Amino acid sequence: MIGRRKAIIERLTRETNIRVDITLDGTGEYKIISPISFFDHMLETFARSSSFNLSINANGDLKVDQHHLIEDIGITLGNAISDALKDRKGIERAGFFVYPMDDAMAVVAVDLGGRPFLNYDCTFKRRYCGNLDTDTLEDFFYGLSIGMKANIVVKIPFGRSDHHKIEAIFKALGKALKQACMIDRMMKDKVPSNKGIIDY
Image (tube, rainbow, N blue to C red):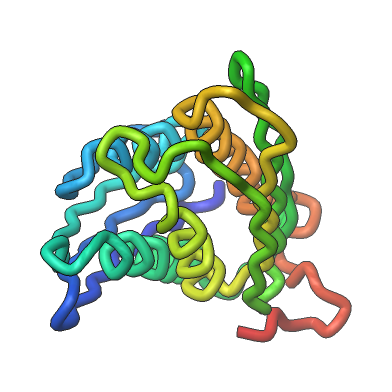
């Protein structure tokens, strides 16, 4: 039986103080605490959709704006996922999901191949959804791609409600990452790369 893949990562800078505790082979339990309640809700949705057990405690310099905190949460979460994956042997490596949510639909694809890159194509009607600055969502996914060392594509083909569009993104991200992190038991001792290593 494959053991639980877990990691705890802390990031402390002059701008942010973040702790992420993750178990990839979990049941979707979560405890998310940050000053941005709408973003907490999205991270909870991500945890439930991925089945990762996820604890995040985060604070930052919101007197400036939300950019530093949101991007650093992405970096730290990505670092934690990367650390929990260890040498990445046996993983499916890539995953994607198309998630419909009422009037909206989101498409997320992930390749845990070791090279960070983000293709982000999302627009919103409002600058704020709840208390989340929607302008910082691209920063979150950029940070996640850097921390996780992954290629990420995020697109919203259509949608009326900004809330539904954003929630569909995080549900699709959870499902895509669940697929990418899944262990192929027939290949559990092999790195999923023609190089024999994942460059990270």
